[in-house]
Length: 97
Image (tube, rainbow, N blue to C red; front, top):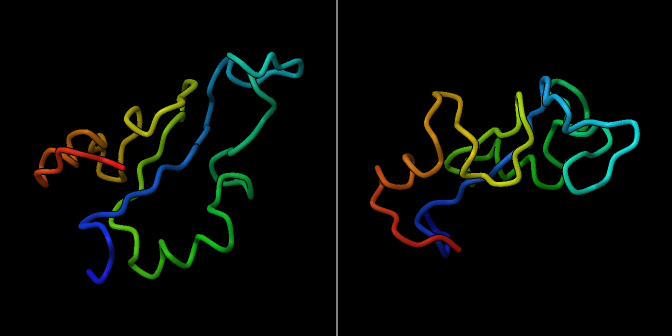
């Protein structure tokens, strides 16, 4: 409401145990240093963006990468377990920006 888009969603890395995605010697292609651990500071939204989420300017948040590497929001799911593609489809969204 009052935005340029009908829906606004966010994705969030939410690593619990992503296996070989974390490495002490990352190659930055398939492995990375520890980051965005669920429940840790790095797993939170940036302080300048968080108010948009808590203030209702974001319609849904999709968590990705819990137990594996994930580079796309389309690999994530919201708190109800709904995949991003399914969420968009249910709302008749045919294009994303």
